[in-house]
Each structure stands twice: as C-alpha cells, then as structure tokens.
Image (cartoon, rainbow, N blue to C red):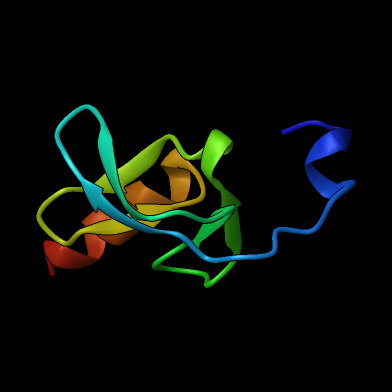
Length: 72
C-alpha cells in the first residue's frame, strides 16, 4: 500500500466471484470489503481471498487468522 491508496476514497463497492487464481467482476466498483475486518480493499490491491467462502481479505495475516478459526 502506498500514499496514493488513501488519496482518493473508494466510492462504489464491487461484487466479485473469487476463482482459484483470479476473480471475475460481477458488478463494477472501486473496492470490496474485507470479510474479517470490514475494511475497504481497493480492487487493484486485492491479493487474498478464500474461494470456498467467496470472501476477500485485506492481508495474508488476516486470511490466515480466519483460516485458523475454521480448524477449531
């Protein structure tokens, strides 16, 4: 993330279908919300998601923490 990420606030939430190594845009938008924290993630910064849950995550740490919750 760089300083430009905060320069313009995201305006419209996108709807995506998460695939194994990519995602398909179902509704155009600027961001999606992290499934764990609710924070907006700009589409161009989206790197982590769970295909089975169809859920985006803001970082690898957050995605891993959510994965560990499923093991309990």
